[in-house]
Image (cartoon, rainbow, N blue to C red; front, side, top):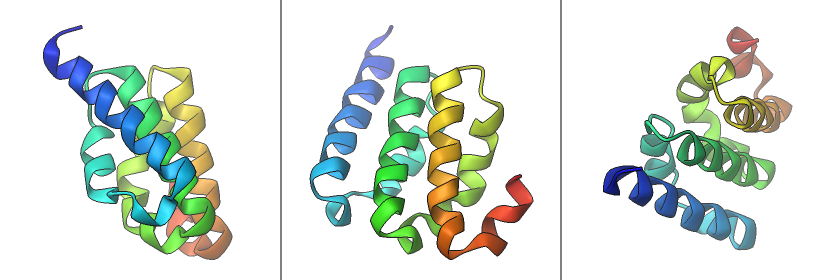
Amino acid sequence: MGNSGRSDVEKAEQIYEEAVENPEAVSVFELRKLLDSSVPRARRRAARALAEVATEYPEEVRPDVDALQPLLKDGYKYARVNAAWALTQVAKEYPEDVRPAV
């Protein structure tokens, strides 16, 4: 894994830890960028962090529904699972926004 890949994973891990501890302080913008990482672990953690945020603040992740949708077909199983979880959390409050993804 090159430096870029390693830094994506490190960023995603750090933001994920923040999401677990303090979801309202998470930079959703940074996570959005990591959803497109070439590194599967970074995509997985970014989606998981968005799921953590969406559990308490689905409105914060609502704009990311379109960015999460492609991960439902990701080659990495855990990226798919975490994207589905994030979308499920958003769908609890905004089902009409997530419906096109399923």
